[in-house]
Image (cartoon, one colour):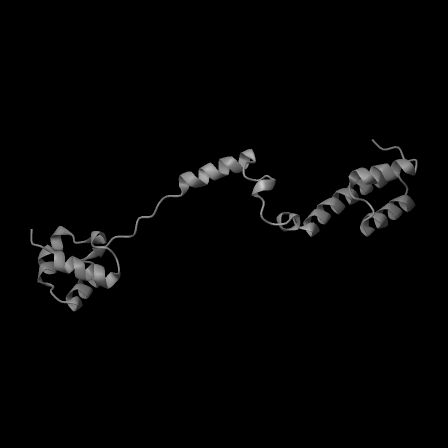
Length: 151
């Protein structure tokens, strides 16, 4: 087998890769041996007679699996690992939306089952909209103070 060091070096230099990534199939060895200039090598690369292998990276599959398992356990999510402020991790608006939806659903349920009348419902609805209630528990306490029986 002829020495193809020159051709491999030229191809590697032109493509900006290492010599190990330059492959020459055995059926094209005679043609590649005749190529002595960069122009010849460039043409052979274009024709597919000199092959440049793709770079091999490091698989991150195992790392991803390990991180996913840790996250499922809740590891790496406690106070010492948190970088952003509380509002950056859970948006205040999103928290408000979840809270208000829960309260409004509960009030609607009470009104539809006849546990509170429309007037009380409207009053509590507007109070919840104004941000009077911190949680559903607050609503239940307010209802008890109004004398409404809640479970």
